[in-house]
Length: 346
Length: 262
Image (cartoon, rainbow over all chains, first blue to last red; front, top):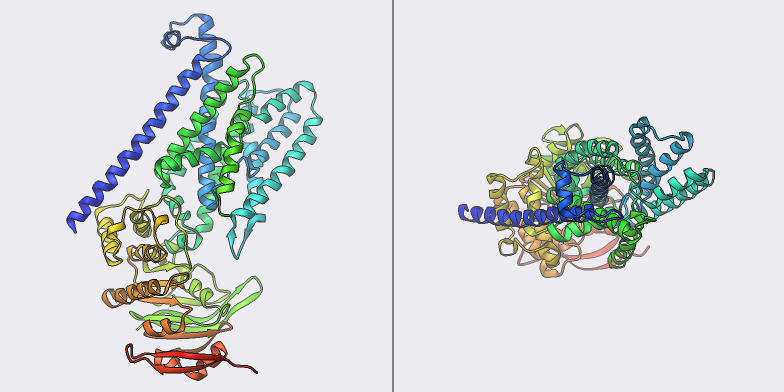
């Protein structure tokens, strides 16, 4: 018995170290992609110059490019990627559905609609609006999630994956139509702003946005991690979870609430990028397995890499008229989604 | 000695009444099997006894206390429930899945301690899964997979285990393997086992106590010898059965049967 226990613990530790190494690799990849991102774009900044500027010895122009333009944008794209990935990971676990993701389910569209309504009513972007926007986005996202949940949930067989996806796509189509209707009413400048935002471009990022999204994620991600074991068990199905002592309905509501809040802040601060919440958790699961304690942080890193790389590509391909990040992600994401759909059992 | 006691239990889905005013006592430390035709409410009854479903009225008592006054976690420390054909997520190893059985006993973020590891090792040994403990559950055969789920229930270390058709979709030899495992566990650990079984002869062979249900009502209950009679099988399954005592097991078995036509 003793020996077996030691063997088992050693094995557990070996697996843990292996997964930690993969996690660290992802971290290195994220740092590398950030460095590349800093150095690329319309205004070139060599690595050494970047380092010098970082240390406070840059010229006025270098300071401007690095601190005011590039850095907040990179930080925002990483944070959004992380948030959307974590949100997707939670929703996939809770619904036992590999294809669920806040973007595809229309939750992000719900958040976005609220943001547009707000923009319509308030023509100027003030500091107040940065504080209020996340809550409006949360309201929109929560309402959408609530509607989808109510429609897709059936008492007899719970939340069927197929019904969830179909409901989500339906709701998303409806919300998009409504959004288009509103956009028609915008004047030219508003229209341009919203059109870019809709397609997902991290425009006009500033430190206020960075701070706001950071604050939300600092509260929400540890909460989700604290619940990681509950997520593991929920993934075994409702009845098993009940049998293992989980109040399924309550925990599911809390966790979906957390995931919706995370995706709402991402939409409010940045944009509506679909597919990140789908791709990142999948790649992470392939790398470190299905245990959420390690899966969630790894998904966050993969999501961060994905969006920051997409943002860099968006900046590099067409330096003058920048293409929105969301489109770059979608070019990779859409085929991946179809691949998963073809492979899935439903 | 009684384990679970259901009193005046009525269960319904929306407006459809599945179980109506049912009283049932499950003997402690014994194997009880519940039999009955499709849609008779046997699974529903099992889920209600396991606190997955809430009854419309009536109570389920566990050691004299209503299970709906206990928290889900308190129930999980006393009772393990295995639903019909559970599905494991991709990429989980046998050992990892079994370790989830420790969940109701863990605090905080749920790191395994030495006691948990001991219990998991014991569950692996009892279900003869030690050799394949680091394999992924998806790659196992149906019988092995069912054994993993049973091992998870064992790791939960409860006095009672409820199982909903644990032999569904299994080959004959796997069915026996699973039931013999449960039988041995009942004899060695003295745990109370309640299971819904489809196969009448297997239900008889491994039971100490049997319950026959039809239309949400109990037709008969008692030892296999008391229950397996021509009348009970006629009332429960609408069959004209030929019953004889099996020499090897000493238990009654339904040798052949015909449909009763009105």
